[in-house]
Image (cartoon, rainbow, N blue to C red; front, side, top):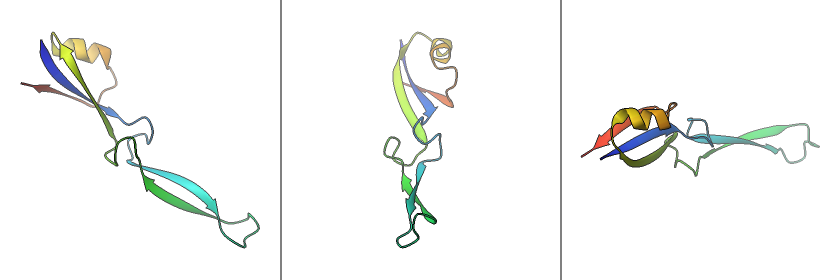
Amino acid sequence: MNYIEIHLTCPECEGYGTLESQRPVINSEGKDHCIIETICEECDGSGEEIRGDFYSNLQQAKEEYPNAKDFILIK
């Protein structure tokens, strides 16, 4: 069995590492908004979610995570 680290796109920020939200501008009567960008708390701004587990081979990990960005074999 090999430990394989699986790198996925963060589902919260879709890989951008940041999230955007809109806030109304004071005294604009709701007409104007400013965009606030914050670091994604799920991935700490990396844009990736990292998982890992033991697999018999790399193909088994690829079958379980077909949309993974990268696979790293940890020895």
